Length: 99
Image 1 (cartoon, rainbow, N blue to C red):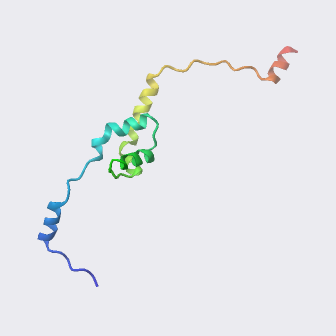
Image 2: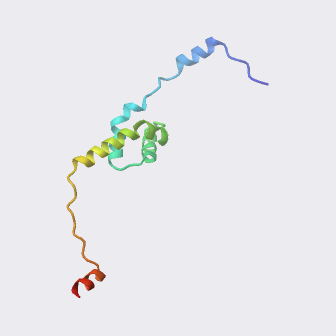
């Protein structure tokens, strides 16, 4: 047996009492800063949970993943390239060049 359908007035009253929805985008700067520090999406989700902010790591990745990737690419492009390191010849090459 199914439960009776509540009246529209009852549903409206419950909607009025419901808290305002929060937008995870309000935490945009903190989330991207944690990514810059190397935190995984799962770790960020756990970290936000410590502040009673429930959001899945999948949702974080979908919302902020592309932007996070763009920011890290831009930072990599801004960094000077690492100096080239000459490789030491391996033992086989050294034997043949001495002959």
